[in-house]
Amino acid sequence: MAAAILSAQVQEQTFDPGALQQVLVTADSGAVVTFTGHVRGGAGEAEVTCLELEYYPGMTERSLLEILEDAATRWPLLAAAVVHRVGRLAPGEPIVWVGVSAAHRGEAFAACDFIMDFLKTRAPFWKKEHGPAGASWVAARAGDDERAARWQSPADGAG
Amino acid sequence: MLRVLFFARVREQLGCDSLELPWSTGHATVEALLSSLQQRGPNWQAALGQPNLVVAVNQQIADSAARLQAGDEVAFFPPVTGG
Image (cartoon, rainbow over all chains, first blue to last red; front, top):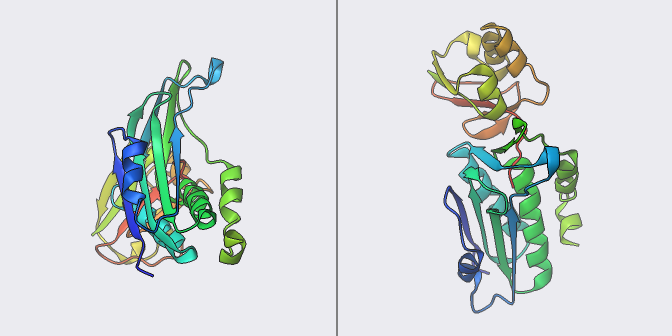
């Protein structure tokens, strides 16, 4: 089968998930799975008025592409793409989009899940939350590492 | 020369986002570079002494034993929190 079409983009401007999804559709793409992550607003003391995202230009794009390449070796994908925003974002705004197309839904769902798990634990992005009490860096969550660890064996992930 | 980059909380703690250092035998490994940088003051010692500090050499995750050569780009940052 032909190599999957892969694309990784880091940008400040917002995006339209519907428009992005179109690039995943081919004559053989029986399944298209997408995920869009949005900024949570929180409430009370945890209210977030603005989310600031920092990244490592060069390494971040390379890291995202490596995650997509890894996914494409684990599952027979037709296309896989990620768009991640940086800069200052308001609650409700889209922050990340992952889209995958494949012949069947099983591999498309699994690959999308895998890409998000690895993106959260491998790609160099850092979030800083701004709220009424000031600004603070978001701490990495053990739960994200545990989710990513599920994919250690390709056989486990593909099952 | 070595190009050294700092990101996120580490960058803020140091008040510094990048340094250019001459390569020397004292900077032959990530560990040696870290010890040398930590001599710069208490905030350097604290920020670069955090157990969860992540290191990348030439934009690939590395460990403290990684060897450094002139022209390398070394980055120090906290665990990532994207997505």
